[in-house]
Length: 367
Image (cartoon, rainbow, N blue to C red; front, side, top):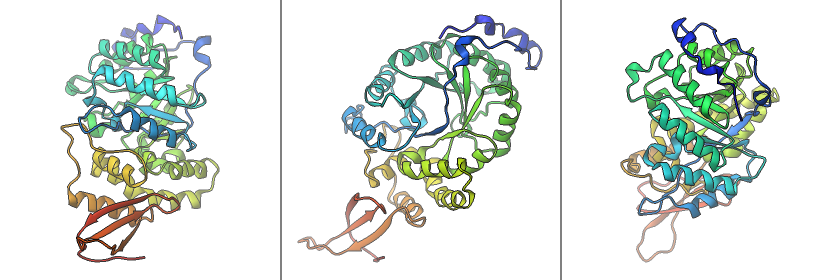
């Protein structure tokens, strides 16, 4: 997609305090915009015991995800452990997903780096690898200097040089930096900036972004299943939700209930998703997401160092957050064993997945 380089004249915007100085007419190439509506899991990256990318297990996960009504997949987002992968690995993972992904599913690839130059280079490689759009996180190492003018200049240069549409990515929990509203408003007018993934969870901010960009073809995605219904209520068009790696059908069902106006059912489902979502995101993070994936029949496995596996106490907390909301049923039965140990089994309601863990049983809970 060849876009007007008039957007490089960012100095006008920077010198005028980010007022709407980019009153440009969208060109024909930018008019046919991707429709982002729907749910995207930010897929995890499986590793071998030697911490190499396990492409076989990745493919097996992709085959299972193909049966869930996702709009597409986000590859090399935060839950894909992208900061721990080399550039070559990041591109190879995107290529592998593109080969497996059905043609009607969108592939959004994370291409954010700390420098503008590196982000442009990786963005172009991701496009060549088959990405339909790129997800570009805010640079944050020098976060004290990442004010609105710096961020506008960064994203503008990336969008000017990207062969595919750009989605802005604000994730303050990881970056310590929220993409300012004035920057989003200005960037929304760029013909190659498609939308924003907002993981901050401030619904008033999300609603204000939707309101302030409503004259643009700008699409906002909720960055978490924990506030998906609330985000839809203020105008978001979809979600990039870590929990969808585990409860994909359920998160898609919540989307369906929201857009079809079945609010009572949506509210009940949303409430049951809040605790497990928090557990695999802000509370326990990627190690918890990968552990939960194992319980639900996907390949999660260990994280790449220096991320550590969950402690036993954290695993128990994670299990409680899923069990107490009805997503796992915990049954303990004595099995014939010469060791005299018991086996603990967790069942995902509605599936044939059975996860066994050998352990000594202190107390028994049965349904």
